Length: 171
Image (cartoon, rainbow, N blue to C red; front, top):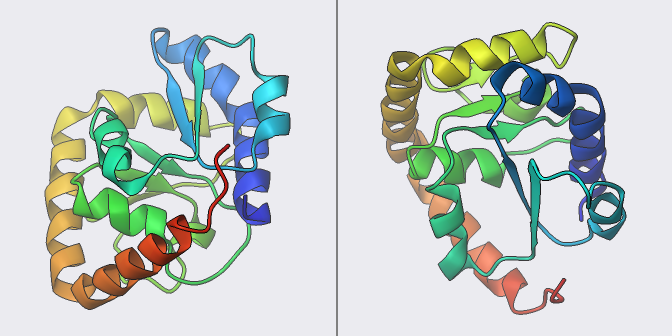
Protein backbone atom coordinates (compact mmCIF):
# COMPACT_ATOMS: atom_id res chain seq x y z
CA UNK A 1 0.00 0.00 0.00
CA UNK A 2 0.86 3.66 -0.34
CA UNK A 3 3.29 4.55 2.48
CA UNK A 4 1.22 7.50 3.76
CA UNK A 5 -1.78 5.15 4.05
CA UNK A 6 0.19 2.49 5.92
CA UNK A 7 1.68 5.14 8.22
CA UNK A 8 -1.78 6.59 8.91
CA UNK A 9 -3.29 3.21 9.64
CA UNK A 10 -0.43 2.06 11.87
CA UNK A 11 -0.58 5.30 13.85
CA UNK A 12 -4.38 5.24 14.11
CA UNK A 13 -4.61 1.62 15.27
CA UNK A 14 -1.82 2.05 17.82
CA UNK A 15 -2.77 5.46 19.23
CA UNK A 16 -6.52 5.85 18.74
CA UNK A 17 -8.42 2.65 18.04
CA UNK A 18 -7.98 0.95 21.43
CA UNK A 19 -9.39 4.04 23.17
CA UNK A 20 -12.32 4.28 20.73
CA UNK A 21 -13.20 0.63 21.45
CA UNK A 22 -12.97 1.31 25.22
CA UNK A 23 -15.46 4.18 24.86
CA UNK A 24 -17.93 2.67 22.38
CA UNK A 25 -17.63 -1.06 23.00
CA UNK A 26 -19.26 -3.03 20.21
CA UNK A 27 -17.53 -1.43 17.22
CA UNK A 28 -15.36 -2.74 14.39
CA UNK A 29 -13.03 -1.07 11.93
CA UNK A 30 -12.95 -2.45 8.38
CA UNK A 31 -9.61 -2.00 6.62
CA UNK A 32 -9.49 -2.31 2.86
CA UNK A 33 -6.36 -2.35 0.74
CA UNK A 34 -3.35 -4.39 -0.24
CA UNK A 35 0.17 -4.28 1.19
CA UNK A 36 -0.94 -4.48 4.82
CA UNK A 37 0.34 -7.97 5.63
CA UNK A 38 2.54 -6.81 8.55
CA UNK A 39 -0.33 -4.93 10.18
CA UNK A 40 -2.67 -7.85 9.58
CA UNK A 41 -0.24 -10.18 11.39
CA UNK A 42 0.25 -7.65 14.21
CA UNK A 43 -3.50 -7.29 14.85
CA UNK A 44 -4.73 -10.78 13.91
CA UNK A 45 -5.98 -11.50 17.44
CA UNK A 46 -7.98 -8.26 17.67
CA UNK A 47 -11.67 -9.04 16.92
CA UNK A 48 -12.49 -5.33 16.45
CA UNK A 49 -10.20 -5.03 13.41
CA UNK A 50 -11.26 -6.62 10.12
CA UNK A 51 -8.75 -6.72 7.27
CA UNK A 52 -10.36 -7.26 3.87
CA UNK A 53 -7.19 -6.99 1.75
CA UNK A 54 -7.63 -5.92 -1.85
CA UNK A 55 -11.33 -5.65 -2.74
CA UNK A 56 -12.47 -5.30 -6.37
CA UNK A 57 -14.58 -2.23 -7.12
CA UNK A 58 -17.80 -4.18 -7.59
CA UNK A 59 -17.58 -5.47 -3.99
CA UNK A 60 -16.05 -2.35 -2.41
CA UNK A 61 -19.24 -0.31 -2.17
CA UNK A 62 -21.04 -3.19 -0.40
CA UNK A 63 -18.49 -3.10 2.43
CA UNK A 64 -18.39 0.71 2.65
CA UNK A 65 -22.19 1.01 2.65
CA UNK A 66 -22.36 -1.04 5.87
CA UNK A 67 -20.14 1.45 7.72
CA UNK A 68 -21.40 4.39 9.77
CA UNK A 69 -18.27 6.53 9.30
CA UNK A 70 -15.25 6.59 7.00
CA UNK A 71 -11.98 7.54 8.70
CA UNK A 72 -9.10 9.05 6.69
CA UNK A 73 -6.30 9.54 9.26
CA UNK A 74 -3.52 10.69 6.91
CA UNK A 75 -0.56 12.43 8.54
CA UNK A 76 1.20 13.38 5.29
CA UNK A 77 0.60 13.17 1.53
CA UNK A 78 -1.03 15.42 -1.03
CA UNK A 79 -3.64 15.60 -3.76
CA UNK A 80 -7.35 14.90 -3.91
CA UNK A 81 -8.08 11.85 -1.81
CA UNK A 82 -10.12 9.21 -3.60
CA UNK A 83 -11.19 7.67 -0.29
CA UNK A 84 -12.87 10.93 0.69
CA UNK A 85 -14.62 11.31 -2.67
CA UNK A 86 -15.82 7.73 -2.55
CA UNK A 87 -17.20 8.33 0.94
CA UNK A 88 -18.99 11.51 -0.18
CA UNK A 89 -20.41 9.75 -3.23
CA UNK A 90 -21.84 6.92 -1.11
CA UNK A 91 -23.22 9.35 1.51
CA UNK A 92 -20.97 7.89 4.21
CA UNK A 93 -19.90 10.66 6.61
CA UNK A 94 -16.15 11.09 6.76
CA UNK A 95 -13.81 12.07 9.58
CA UNK A 96 -10.42 13.12 8.26
CA UNK A 97 -7.28 14.92 9.30
CA UNK A 98 -6.44 18.39 8.04
CA UNK A 99 -3.77 16.83 5.80
CA UNK A 100 -6.35 14.50 4.24
CA UNK A 101 -8.63 17.38 3.16
CA UNK A 102 -5.88 19.73 1.92
CA UNK A 103 -6.68 21.01 -1.56
CA UNK A 104 -10.34 20.10 -1.28
CA UNK A 105 -13.10 22.66 -0.85
CA UNK A 106 -14.76 20.90 2.06
CA UNK A 107 -16.03 22.74 5.13
CA UNK A 108 -15.56 21.22 8.57
CA UNK A 109 -18.85 20.08 10.20
CA UNK A 110 -20.65 20.91 6.94
CA UNK A 111 -19.32 18.40 4.34
CA UNK A 112 -16.82 16.47 6.47
CA UNK A 113 -15.48 16.33 10.03
CA UNK A 114 -11.87 17.50 10.35
CA UNK A 115 -10.00 16.48 13.50
CA UNK A 116 -6.49 16.19 14.87
CA UNK A 117 -5.40 12.73 15.98
CA UNK A 118 -4.49 13.82 19.50
CA UNK A 119 -5.50 12.38 22.88
CA UNK A 120 -8.94 14.05 22.63
CA UNK A 121 -9.80 12.23 19.38
CA UNK A 122 -11.44 9.08 20.87
CA UNK A 123 -13.84 11.21 22.95
CA UNK A 124 -14.68 13.40 19.94
CA UNK A 125 -15.09 10.32 17.75
CA UNK A 126 -17.58 8.84 20.23
CA UNK A 127 -19.55 12.11 20.20
CA UNK A 128 -19.70 12.15 16.37
CA UNK A 129 -20.43 8.43 16.17
CA UNK A 130 -23.53 8.92 18.32
CA UNK A 131 -24.68 12.22 16.77
CA UNK A 132 -26.92 10.78 14.06
CA UNK A 133 -28.29 14.23 13.08
CA UNK A 134 -24.80 15.61 12.46
CA UNK A 135 -23.83 12.49 10.51
CA UNK A 136 -26.95 12.80 8.31
CA UNK A 137 -26.24 16.49 7.67
CA UNK A 138 -22.61 15.80 6.72
CA UNK A 139 -23.62 12.85 4.60
CA UNK A 140 -26.18 14.88 2.60
CA UNK A 141 -24.01 18.01 2.26
CA UNK A 142 -20.95 15.93 1.37
CA UNK A 143 -22.88 14.16 -1.36
CA UNK A 144 -24.16 17.48 -2.70
CA UNK A 145 -20.72 19.12 -2.90
CA UNK A 146 -19.24 15.96 -4.44
CA UNK A 147 -21.81 16.15 -7.25
CA UNK A 148 -21.33 19.93 -7.71
CA UNK A 149 -17.56 20.30 -7.46
CA UNK A 150 -15.98 16.89 -7.98
CA UNK A 151 -18.23 15.10 -10.47
CA UNK A 152 -15.74 15.34 -13.36
CA UNK A 153 -12.85 14.40 -11.13
CA UNK A 154 -14.79 11.46 -9.71
CA UNK A 155 -15.31 9.98 -13.17
CA UNK A 156 -11.62 10.31 -14.00
CA UNK A 157 -10.71 8.81 -10.63
CA UNK A 158 -13.01 5.83 -11.22
CA UNK A 159 -11.58 5.22 -14.68
CA UNK A 160 -8.05 5.47 -13.29
CA UNK A 161 -8.93 3.11 -10.43
CA UNK A 162 -10.45 0.66 -12.87
CA UNK A 163 -7.30 0.68 -15.02
CA UNK A 164 -5.08 0.16 -11.96
CA UNK A 165 -7.26 -2.61 -10.53
CA UNK A 166 -6.43 -4.84 -13.49
CA UNK A 167 -2.77 -4.62 -12.46
CA UNK A 168 -3.17 -5.02 -8.71
CA UNK A 169 -2.02 -8.20 -7.01
CA UNK A 170 -4.44 -10.29 -4.99
CA UNK A 171 -3.65 -9.91 -1.30
